[in-house]
Image 1 (tube, rainbow, N blue to C red):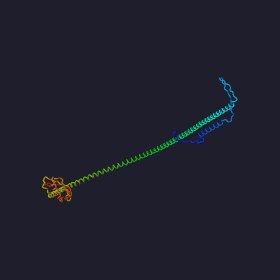
Image 2: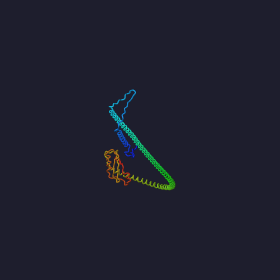
Image 3: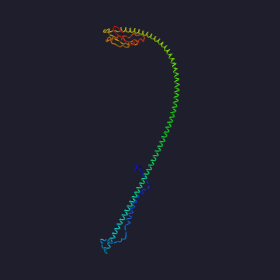
Image 4: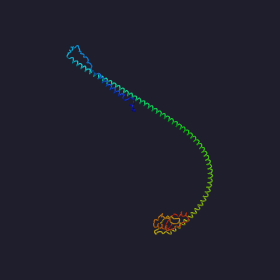
Length: 346
């Protein structure tokens, strides 16, 4: 058996006409016929058969003929009839058994034949079912092959259409590429023409610019020479003015420095322990008004009293004499250093 789906095959035969029902019916019929035959073979009021008295004669042992006694005849007849009756019954029983055996044999033969027919019918149906399944399988296989062939054909057609589409797209792309290439060549030619014109225009402008530049350079050189001469004259004038200013500032700074030293010398009272070797350097910062902004000891004399006396002298002045010129003030008097020494005040 193959692993196929089992199918229930209906032959359209009524159940009472099935082989099993027919077999059972035949068996019952054989039994009835056997019983009827047995009842027919039973003797009813048959005349007793004639008795035959026989004697076996042998050459070896001859025996004398039996002597029938007239007085025992009725008993022997009765006994003979009983034996005959018994023999008939035995024969009837044997016949009945033979008929039953024959009926059984026939029934079994029919049953075997019916079983063989049934098996043959089942085999035929089985073969028909197998043939039908094979036909259905062939039909399914044919349908599958047809479907596959149709699918392959569809795929082939689809592939062919795709190939044609790609071929058309390739040709279109090539055509577009050729068109773009031609357009690019035209644009390149136009660009080169424009570049050539632009180059020529640029060259013309460059030459014009160079000409103008040379003219401008010549003019600039002339102007520069003129300005240089004027600048040199101004520089000389400024230098002369600066020297005069410097001389004036130096003169004023020396004058006001002398005034400041004089004021501090008047305000300074060195301690008794001061010696001529002691020197204290102080850094003084003034305001534009001449007021003291700050004072700082930058170099000690080694004697605290000496240092403090110098600091006290610087702080004692309410206003320092300074020049009215702001430049001179910023340069010389905004911040300056002064030394305190018993011999000199610098």
